[in-house]
Each structure stands twice: as structure tokens, then as C-alpha cells.
Amino acid sequence: MLGTPPPPEGNQDAQMQFSMGQGYAEGGLMAEADEQRLFTEACLHGLRARLCDDVDALDGCLPPHVAALARTVAGVLEVPWPTAV
Image (cartoon, rainbow, N blue to C red; front, top):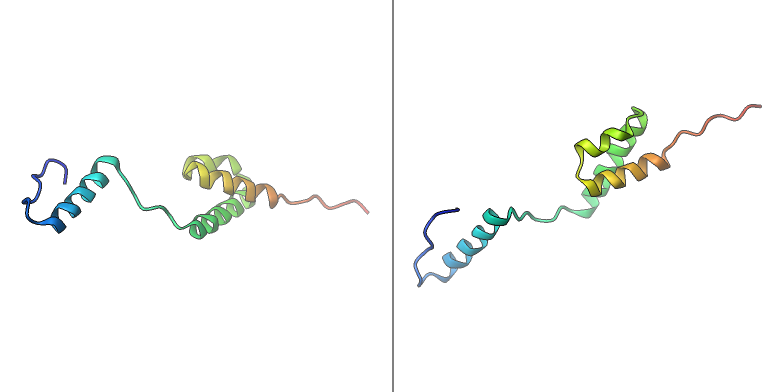
């Protein structure tokens, strides 16, 4: 898409699609992810991190906002120590 000539002036649909494609190509624009999917992903990663006792690894494999939510989930899932009877 980058570097290609624009479509002819008379074709409005092609010009609009070309303009949108240029924006995506130049700015790396992506559609926003579904919030419910991000929450589910964060919960699963947080649970895995807590079970493996590897919460610090969340920052290396997830986007910052998902890692922060996964870290919160992992903190909530902290295993309480049994009380002495």
C-alpha cells in the first residue's frame, strides 16, 4: 500500500478505501480488541502466573494494560497459608 499511486479521481469508493489503507499502513492502526476477550486473557494469564509462581513474567509476554490486569488477578488469587490448629 505504501508507495503505490492513488486511484483515479472519479472513483470515490476506491479513493476512500485507498485513504483508509494508507492510514493503516502508515500509522499501524489496528482495531481495538474486545474488552471481554482482554479480561478473559488477563484472568487466564494471572491464574497461570499464580500457579507457576511466576508473576514477574507477565510483563514480558503481555501488553502493559493486560499485564497489569493479570497481575491484579494473580494478587487476588494469592493462596492463603493454612492456619495452625
